[in-house]
Image (cartoon, rainbow, N blue to C red; front, side, top):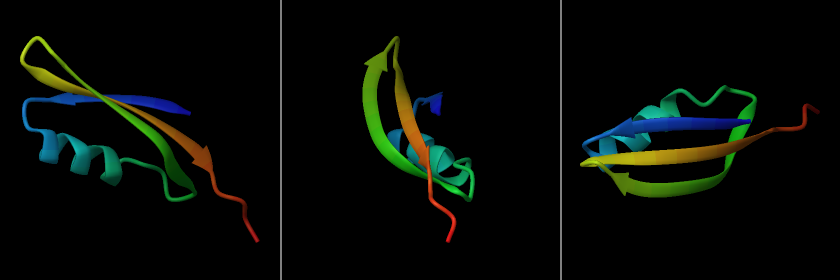
Length: 51
């Protein structure tokens, strides 16, 4: 799954991305860009195997 988050403060935007990641998913990759005075985070997540 790929999610996109944006904001003017990198720390807050990353925290927002972490808090909105579903419980049974984990972040697999994070790409950070700075466009038009905002940080844009592209977060790739993958489902964690249930045991």
